[in-house]
Length: 115
Length: 112
Image (tube, rainbow over all chains, first blue to last red; front, side, top):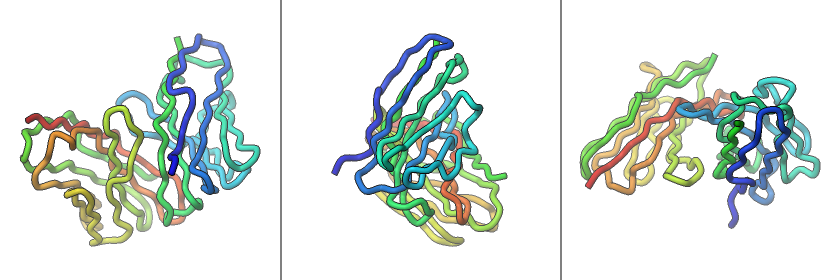
């Protein structure tokens, strides 16, 4: 079946602009995660959704970052007033349920470049 | 807090060579441990995992053993192939959590 998909695959924006990154999880997966991978680093947790609600947003770096999952499927990560330090690959993952017993499946990521 | 330290790359090996990528961790309790692989142009894929001490995870000829006494989860393969060229990430999942904590990744290049 289809895996996790993310759009766009690449996004270049100017400093100060607003961007939205989209994630389509595997159908039927209730848990959805966003991670950020900076150059030369491993992915870092941003936020976790169980269903429609953000169960844990402790990884969001500041209030310029926000994510939604209004119908419990597709999620959008929103970044306001982008800064050059936001440049990274943003990864989305989903799992059947949000416990360690269930594997997280990752999408290919969106490479965000802020100029 | 939780952290994962893995050997820095890049690692370059000839085909059929033996591979070891070291990984050590710091965590409270008894985490689950994972190796993920990222092939060029693709997303992260789970390679293998171990959920308790002395467990051995294995897949595609790769193995790693959960060593609680040394807080390690080293990845090994007896004979690498060109197709194994990728970036390998060690990760942990604290018991009761869902946040994966990753190491920085080790790039492996296998030359014919």
